[in-house]
Length: 341
Image (cartoon, rainbow, N blue to C red; front, side, top):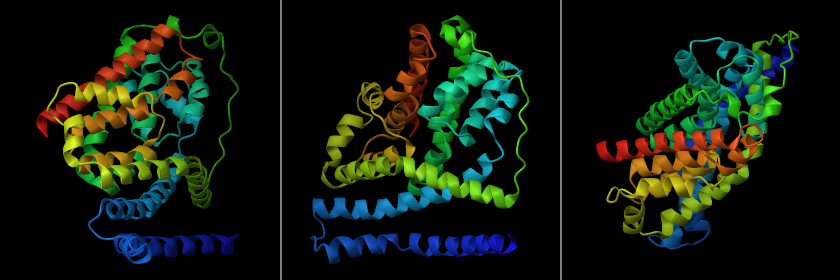
């Protein structure tokens, strides 16, 4: 076992050094592939799109692996049972804040919405607190923040973090004040949580490294196709869409650009890793930051497949309240940033 641990530690150190060397030379490699291997003429739309594609593909995947591995280790400290225990019985507004913060580092995706919601409701977590978690987890997860930081800098990442947390906290609090517990599906209200105590497995740091490795395999294996599709769309926008066109559709000039961006985003199905390359390309073509952030938030936090899954748990009025309150929060974020930036 000691030999195995030593191997993993050495391999991890070597991997980090190799990661940094490759990451700092990605632009050189992308230019070589585009203009030397493919013989595409510099200054053309096609050359710009292909260079963007071959630069962003390894860049996004490398950032994704690093971020998911690090947060996978953090996640090993937050089992679903421990998360529910932290949220149950808290003062409601404090619970909204705590739930939104936990959403950043706790595993959540559409496929796990139903069991997590049931687990929260049946263990005494207030409904509004539960919604703060459900909004935060997909919208402000480590993938979104890590890629935003790596691709667009800490200022945009920090703005997204702050506004995303605000939307999650305030939306959850408003839903809690509406007292809509009767609009949960009857089968959920009749469900009783398992009262038996669960003996949590004690993990060593070596176990947590393995946990991070497994998280990389699971998450990257699940989202890689969306990343490639998102980067392909971003490359097309970067190379072929005129700047004045994007500025007219998603710029600051008209009040309707933010609502339109939200309406376009809701039916789309993507995750943070897939949509951020599109966001990067839109900003590069002159789209307004607030409009683009509103578009990104609507795609991630109000995706149609997630709403369909939650429909198994929530009645129509609560579903509509959830969509409306979160959409209003996202609209306010978009307008705010378009005014001040």
